[in-house]
Image: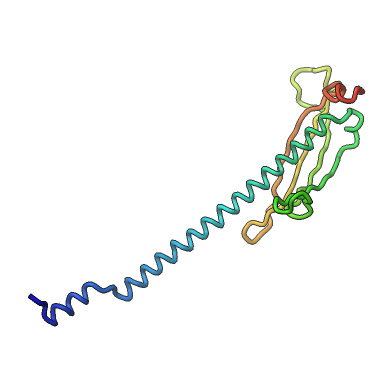
Length: 163
């Protein structure tokens, strides 16, 4: 049995999408696409910020290891300022990219428990590094800091042979 004309038009009206339904579905797909791109953008920003933070930590460790091998008399030249750049895409030249500015300072040791007699033969070394990231529409300054103690008769005497 074949459907007549009234049944065909009724079936056609119930099977089609209305303009409102299509516009709502386009809006939902557009919002989903926008949120996916925003998520990717945020994720890449977090990865870049983490890379810069890790590089700052590497720079501080490198400077601290070098300071531990300095002679006691050379530590009197502090504060020492330095600037290091890093761009992983530039290869070995490191002439562009994030600029890390740092300072190394020495201070007398304070806060040791009791009346330690060796505090005159020790100093506290503080290394700080600062860099700037562009986040959103503004520049944000980040910083990292490390501290260690250096003894007058420490490891450097085994390397250089002089206190």
